[in-house]
Length: 177
Image (cartoon, rainbow, N blue to C red):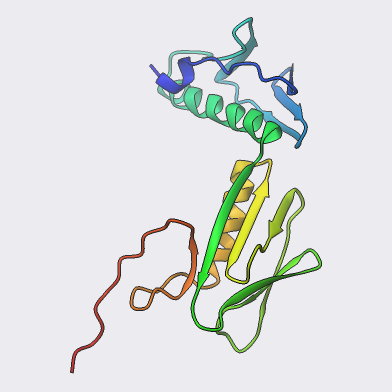
């Protein structure tokens, strides 16, 4: 039994959920999202909120049960409050700046890296060494943060590169003479 799947998704004020055939649509102040359900899970709207149930007793249905509940819950939370990831840039001369809707990164290459902001995502640079990514879709926010981090991952000797705020980098000792 899925512990996550058993929990109903509580109704949230300001967020409307519509279930049409195999499509779950969620609307809120931050936007609109939809999810196409697999045939092996069912979603019902009750007094407690949304309840996700496996359609049959197969291992695949039980595996998809909790995942589907988590995806719908993330959609509800995303359209209400949104999600946010913060990146930190470390290194001499490494900096970030917004150029219109694009993010311009100086990461020690011979050229500047320009990252085009995808639709539904907001990127802000409160300082030259901080990047804040926000949006309603949790998966998309995380993917954008991972794409930006991939330009220059933190290296283990000096810790230079792009990292998540609070990320621990295992440091190595340098070469000895």
